[in-house]
Length: 180
Image 1 (spheres, rainbow, N blue to C red):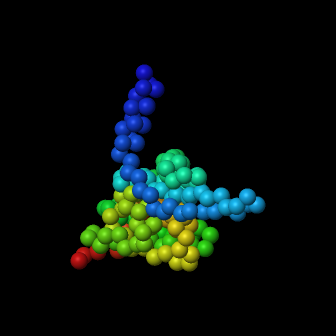
Image 2: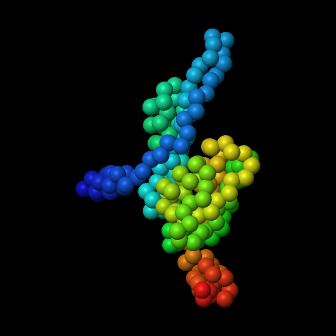
Image 3: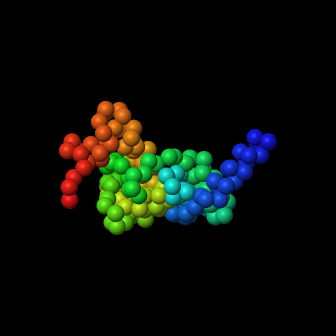
């Protein structure tokens, strides 16, 4: 009975998950018999409620690579703490030569980001954020750097408890809530 309930919950969660293919790249391996072509797919999945994952899939045919990428993305999903449709604080992520900076933004700003970073943030449920990608523009590295940056986020409640201050002091600085 428990197993049936777990399967039903899992099916319900997977129905909410949105999938997006960010990149399809053709790769070639040169052998003495000629070139062997294959495809690399970068996929992002998320529920727009604080869960997001990325996956790479490689196969000889595009549909197989897409299935592999989506499967890898679903298995690598991470939880992202959100605060009023943005992130709780500034964060940074690095992967090889790529670096991604993400800052919270005021309501109505939208997501100011490149295609790869935008896909990850949108599927995580972030609606307002300012980002800057520095260094390499390799899409796989940017996606991984974005996930690393999102992993570094700490919910305001946890930060307040760790620092032994109020939540408003964590979010707005030492003076608490600003007038204006």
